[in-house]
Length: 302
Image (tube, rainbow, N blue to C red):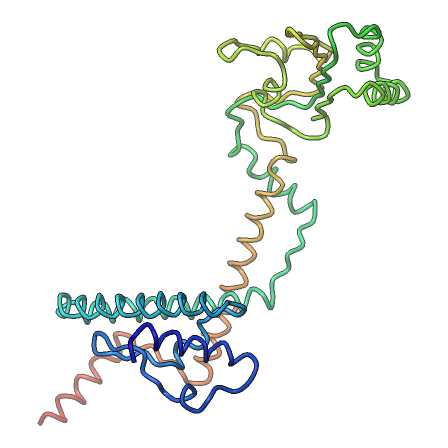
């Protein structure tokens, strides 16, 4: 039977596996390919075929799978010949990697079973206060709002006054007026944003310095050929000042989690170590043991 025809028959048989048991011929250890001193059998391929493929797609997938397998075995065979002298080093690296994976899995088991992922505001604040000198801003950050409206809006002055008012009732009037006229509002009053990002919502020039805008909390304005913009910067932290806690909170949570994770791993490691010593499963041989062992060896040689 030709190779392509054989693949098509095998693929068709595998499709039937989802509905009924495979015929005895295909349920056997049918050899599909040989390469590099290894064999690819039907049982190795059966689970690799995705469900729901058409007969044509299954045949194509089978051909691709077998072709990739053959190429891989040929490369492995060549590598084993070329690097036969490095076999011990490769085995050592594989074993070291296996050990790393096992230990990592064990440590994750410790962490999943024991770690507490809840951090109180007090814990976060305590870490921040102890380390905030290590976190400095490399650019100004601000809180504020921007509203964009048409150039000929008749109640522009009223809108500006409402925006700058400290009255909650007038602030609600400001929000209602913006909603009624479908004005675009960028509200950063509850979050810190980089000053350059804040400026990106305004008709600013790329190479011009706008630090003077940080000097006031009053409502300021700009305009372009189509719109006018009212904006208000409510709060500022300048370059070189400590980064605010609000901005660092997610980072601090990750740091505290890593610290707690390390503590869990170290604690279980110590418990494992001490238990093994107590039960006699571990013995540490010091310098004082060496002469005795050497004497025993010499006596045996005699």
